[in-house]
Image 1 (cartoon, helix red, strand yellow):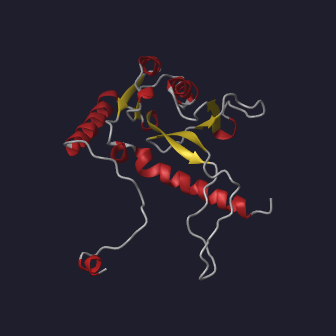
Image 2: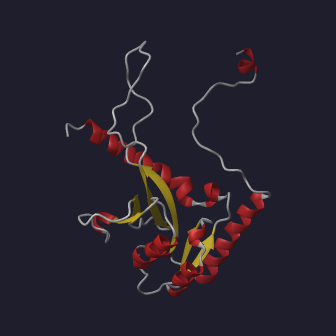
Image 3: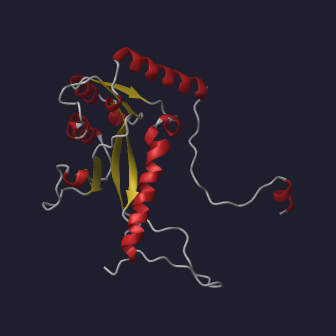
Length: 223
C-alpha cells in the first residue's frame, strides 16, 4: 500500500480496452484528416452527404454494475430476465449534419419471424444471420436499404462514406454498389478507429447508455 501511495496509484474498475496503436500513428491520423479535407474541397460534398457507419454489439439485457444493497451482505444480486449474455448487432450511421439514418439490427437466427417487419418500420431495419454478425451480404443489403435511401441518394448527389477496415466493407461488390450511387469510399486504417471513427468516439457509448436507461425503466415496471 505504501508503494501505491508513493506512486499515486489505486485499484480502479476498467473503463475501456485500448487498441494497440500502429507505428507512426500520428502521421497516419494527419494524412487521413488531410485526405478527407482534400476530398471535401475537391468534390464539394454537402454536409448531409458525408456519412460514417459502424457495427456494435448490443446485449438483450444491460443491468447496471452497481446497485443499492444492505451493508454487510456478502452476495449482491441484480434482477434480470436471464438473457444478459445474448446479443445482437446494430449498424449505426450518422451524417456530418447530424442526421441519423435508420438502425440496421441483425439477430442471431436462421429465419426472420413472419410477424417482425424488416422494411424500416419504426426507424429500424431487422435482418437475421446465423452468428448474429454483419457479413458481406448484409453490408450490401445495408447499402441498398439504408445508405441508398438517405436524403439525396435518389438524386445521386456526390457523397462520401467512411468505414473501418472490416473486410466486408472492402469487397469489390461493395465498391461497385457505392460507385454506382456516386459515393466515394474511405477506409479507416486498422487500429485507428477509436481515434478517427466518429461513432466509436462520440456516438456508440451514448447510444448504449440510452438503451441501458430504457432497459432499467422497463425492468422497474410491473409488467
